[in-house]
Amino acid sequence: MINEYSLSDKQAQAILDMRLVRLTGLERNKVEAEYQKTMEAIADYQDILARPERVHQIIYEELLDIQDRFGDDRRTELMVGEALSIEDEDLIEEESVVIALTHNGYIKRVPTSDFKAQKRGGRGVQGMGVHDDDFIEHLLTTSTHDMLLFFTNKGKVYSMKGYEIPEYGRTAKGIPVINLVEFESGEKISTVLNVTTTEDVDINKLRLFFTTKNGVVKQTSVADFTNIRKNGLKALTLRDNDELINVSILDQDSTIIIGTHQGYAASFASSSVRVMGRAASGVRGIKLREDDYVVGTGVLTSDSKVLVISENGYGKLTKASEYPVKGRGGKGVKTSTITSKNGPLVGFTTINGDEDIMVITDKGVMIRFDAQNVSEVGRSAMGVRLMNLKDGGKVSTMTVVAKEEVENEEIMSEN
Image 1 (cartoon, rainbow, N blue to C red):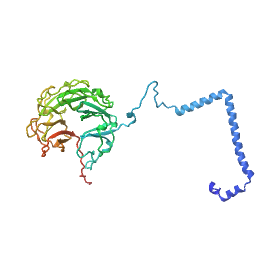
Image 2: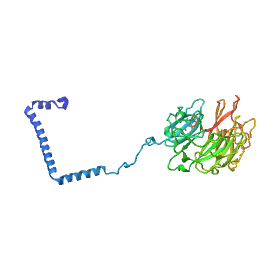
Image 3: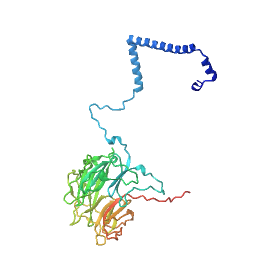
């Protein structure tokens, strides 16, 4: 008893000296008290059953208590007669992410929180991980709830929500995009666009501007691409021996410029191309000369510059003001002097000047350089050498990519 109830020696001895009759009396008093309490409760219940006014009073008081405790507004909405369904998107938190798609077809999603802002002079963070013979061709900042449109050279479009692209670490390679999209044989992605679906953006006012290798252009409302099957959807009807080169998303009337293999460029207002349905093949955007074809296109603004790359590694930048805006369907003006030294054009686009340029040869050699290192010259100039082709190769592809962040040692010392 001393250990169990923390009693002193005297207290324990007093209990031991107590007669059994006294202990029995203590227990009896407890039982009698419980009995008396139970009998009083029985009498009260019988009085309630005998008097209806007491029953009503008790119900009234209990209802007031329920009102006080649970009288707030309903938090759920009752939908009578309506079938409801919960989509995956309803269960996924909306957050800002970066989507990276490489030249060799690897894709991944990275949270923007992995790229924290740093003070000037910092060391930076390790960039996106890719294979040695690969590079990031498409880099988009989007939301997990936004829709991504993947346009292929065959004129088809596939779509995925941002959250459907697997999330990987910043340095991971990603997953082959063919594991996510059911491409047909010979299809390759030519353009990736992000369609924001916030309340501030009216999807009915957004338009897609298509340009094909044979100079055909088409303008279609983005609203026509809101429901795309898993196996894709035809974005435009391609004519024989043609393929889709580029797709631009427009939110207002713009100036479009198209460049060709033989060094010509035509610029015209996008409003000169009427809005057509998905099944339409489009209209002539530029009248091509014999054996010529489109190598690139872009949206031309007063602040943009035109970048051209030739197959022998020459390139240049030209001010937008040197390209007159004329009617659609013309032959265009000379955008580069083509000689045996520089060769015909393989790349043509518009840039702002703060991007990186990636050039790839048919031998698999790649070079990346800052767009600001490219000389700015006139339309008829040949350009300057940007890549030294010693192995007899030719430039096959030119891509504008986001500027690469390099790791710099701290250059600011503490005072």
